[in-house]
Image (cartoon, rainbow over all chains, first blue to last red; front, side, top):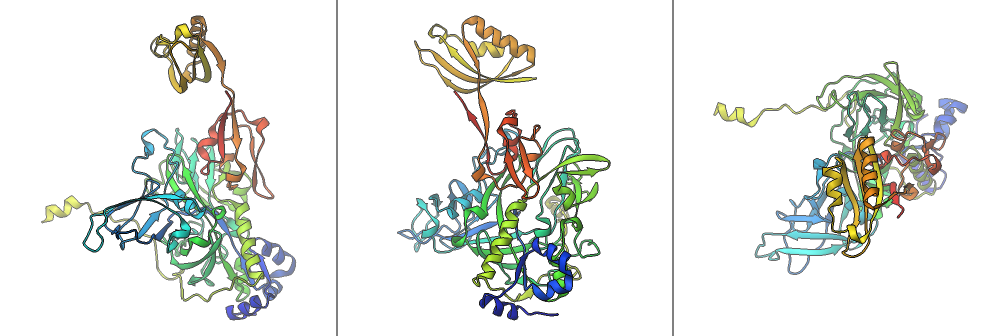
Length: 407
Length: 137
């Protein structure tokens, strides 16, 4: 059988679309088989709620009087520096930005209690945020200082723009050293006492469409409680990695760049996160609908936790030194059981990605589609896939001093 | 190594004596003052955390009692702010008593205060501030 997105949207508009979440579809396939499931189900919804590496938001705050040129000046929001390298009143707030006077790791391990992600969360929650700005002043934009409360509703544009979200699979982090280490994968106890993982597994968007066959530039998604769109592949997109027989990447692979209107989002699905000893990041709810275009699509979407494997990596030595050593491979099912075995040792597991919330995202997206308020989009362009040759490279360091010698 | 949080109440006649200094210099303890209210001619109140090997901490507490300082242990409670929790399960790793646990079917986290020993390891691990210390006294 085949189905087009146009046909699916026609059914959605009539309130007749048959939708399952990526978790529900597993049981459907077990009972009815792939063929019948594909014939019956129009859309499978996926979801995830986890820290999302590279996120931020841009705003147009509107002009004060007299006019002021923030671009090229300095701007802070609740003391967190924003980037002001754009037009007069356009600013960008990155999720990982922290106040200049944050002690960072000087008192080890640092708390990183407040940063860009928290500013974005506070704005989405409707709170007042303090904006300070200083500028060099021009004839047309003479004002030099501004210190004002702002809030989301008063802003012109407030757009979530994330250059890397929805990592397709991720490492399982352990610590082989003798001291506690503080990483973006959380606090890791010494001698491999715990293993932290971060994946929504069988609900994960890109693990349900591992070769990116049904999504691309322009795909409409659930983002932060509202609507968003896929902009394209995200930074560090790495589609050419080794994959299982079923096409599932066995190491971190694809990523997505996404965007959405912050004014339609909700702090339940967009939270600032403070990682002790590491920094601040944004935890986000993201869900993608998979149009069941053919049986193969359904088969990919019926992936279960037992079929997805993730590599166990030491974050005390191997990871910081860029050594691609893998201590073992475990399935997501094993990770979610609470305990895995690595080199004969039992290790307790802890997650960073909320499966309970991922389930909720997929169910919300399902309800939007069933209600007829969410239509699927045809991708405008595909993402680079496994056969594209596209890969994530390290930085070839060429120290500045050496070039000077040549001159 | 012992770590003890205590509430110290100083009678007025001890207010002008450098007792905290003596705890450090003479008793050899690492003292962290968490809260202090010292006013001349009134009872002074301090909440301190004392760090050192067990024998020294015990000796330090006896030294204070001998001087006439009233010493009481600080009652602390770890609280789970459910509305801040996103149920990621990161807190399960450090919890030594499984006071923090997960229901594997729903993958939702729960907190059994009865099992909590206030070791405070979870506080550092939760990225969303869902674990908090509530201090009595």
